[in-house]
Image (tube, rainbow, N blue to C red; front, side):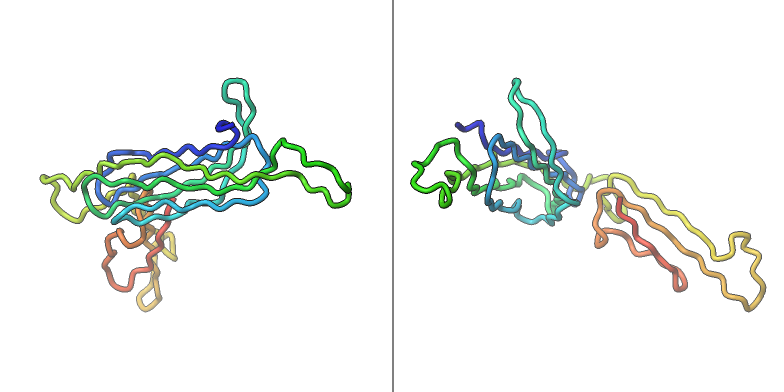
Length: 194
């Protein structure tokens, strides 16, 4: 019975640096039709949590048994170093059970439903501090790219004519608030998160 509906959670990496992105993945496995459900959100002390994109649904087999899987991803940015626990997620679901109710009148019969409370495991993160030897502004991004473009690609501007320089800062695994400020005389800045 317990294998009809269960949750799996994981976090990658489990030993991030402070302010670095952790991808927290939730997978709901089910062999029953859910009619109504509520799911708690990930909670972790001293961290920013952001849902990534839309849920995806697909089918898979485990030990020869077919399951529908709903997958949801979150980005978590720990703001302090130390050991932190992502609390277990709780799913309360009403689903169609295989039990038949007595038939008094076919018109009023509804499929029999059951309610189940499913709890995931807790996940512990060991968040590392900024390395002592590091000097400068810390940015725990996975990758960072700075590029530029000009309104006149040939840069053959004439005196008195405006020329626009656009700086594009692409960061993978960072929030907008973590990015360093780009200085210059009225720069046009685009932030792209990918």
